[in-house]
Image (cartoon, rainbow, N blue to C red):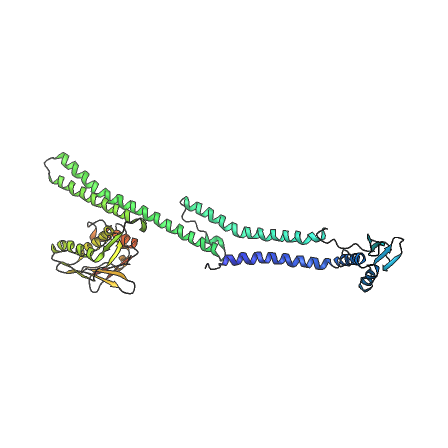
Length: 419
């Protein structure tokens, strides 16, 4: 059931107040008009007198006029065709006169010193409440239309500014002290503009870093080609060109992978996969690289953990993290990979711990940014491995964090839900 919002109550109270005031004012006018010269009570007495004369005769009409407590300035009289008063009081100058035939067959004239109120909507007096109600409704409707329309119009202009690239536009400060769903919408629009600004700046920064990373191997390749043209006998330049070409190919492949994991989570292909088995394959491959520096990679894992995931993206994720750990761990040490199921969340937690120097505390978050590398890592990799790992884990609804170990070492903790 939808919860009634603050905006709903504002609208409800405003329209309820408008209709209530219209009703109260209309009743007040009717009540005040009952004491005027067009008294509707006089009309009721005349109608009753006429009915009695027609159905019961002159005697019944006389009894009604006898018991009627009329004001001093109001008189009603019943006359015959000869002008003789048969009932009621004399009427010198009748303001109302009506001819009728009584039950006895006598032609009578019913006269009144005052005109009765015009009932049944037959006069301008009864239309006054309708006119006042219409005017009041128009005033309240105009106020509510303004109250709702001006912030929406400002929102529209602000969104148009954002669409043109002016991301510094803010809407909420223009709302004043207003507190309702429109202000909440303004806050969301401001957050959207801020996030778009951050994304555009990140994209521009990424393009700058990509151009820088591509320019370096291209420059070296051009220099090697120039030297080779000057001295064709320098065969080592061919190897240099080959290495730089391979480096560019690796960078482009990493960039394409990063572009894929930047997409929507629902856009990736998923299939049931045992993540523990995937980890075992990666650890076995990493063991060969670790053996070259006298290190080991150990896997301590729980039984099978089957989830509907993208095997390619998770392979990239775990491979990048484990290879980073092997690269930074000290010689003759062990990189520990521990995988266990969290019984509370029914998810998988994987911890990769190395025995290396760790990372500065202020860089524990920024190491997941594209092209982020430490001072001692300027010539190692491209700084995209952890970025790809972060995006791959987030696309599966998981998290990845880094923390330093005491006295040395770094742990990467990856949490994945069971899909």
